[in-house]
Amino acid sequence: MKNQILKKIYTLFTEWSSHGQIACRKGCAVCCTRNVTITALEGEIILRFIIKHKMAQWFGEKLKVEKAHHRPKMSTNDFARACLQERNVDFSETPGQAPCPFLEENICRIYPARPFGCRMMISERTCTADQPALLPERYLAASTAVTQIIEHLGQKEYWGNMLDVLPALCDISEFSPISRHLSTADMMQARLRTLTAKPLPGFLFTEEEEQTVSPLLQTLFDTEIEGKRIEDILNGNY
Ligand code: SF4
Image 1 (cartoon, rainbow, N blue to C red):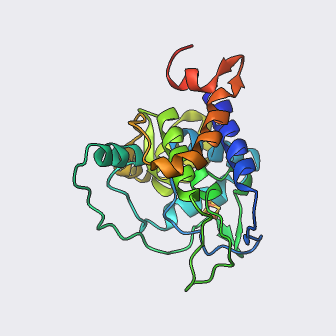
Image 2 (tube, helix red, strand yellow):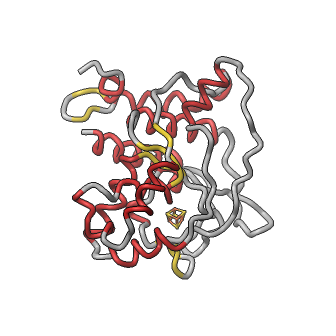
């Protein structure tokens, strides 16, 4: 059921965000860096896609080649909780801009299975190395809220950089076609680098932003999966 909810979230957000002028085109990969964070649920979708498309060896090699990537100190919901409690938050992290290893000739090889952190990146202008994405107005508030919901959905499981969560999940027997290309030490170290997904402590948007975000969230919460509202499922009331 969680998988169905996640895929529904992907679909609803894509529909919501596809209005207006978007400059993103196949072959533009400026946003594709090693800074993408995911939940375990999102990682499992990627790993199943890799196995289904017989890309296990290629993928295993990609996961073990490069270990230098950004590791956030707190999850989005941890960050939100700290902000809502008016605690000091350390903003000193500086993510690198190295390209994502799943790119080949600027094309994402896992595109149909890409996580929300990739799906939420859109730009109203063509990006270059010197000119980052220009997000539509209030888009960040909506994408952050959805990121928080996805973390809530995956609570108590791995959360972290995609390049840590993916090898961390590879000790599940279902993913043995990939894990045989990784060492036990690789997988163990990856597990140690992940954080744990946390429940939603509340949203961070302002009252003004709420007007933009609410219709999207209400549609999402009212959508039914197997006859149950997603909001009720997320609240454990089903
Ligand atoms: S997974 Fe694909 S879409 Fe996401 S950053 Fe990597 S190459 Fe880009």
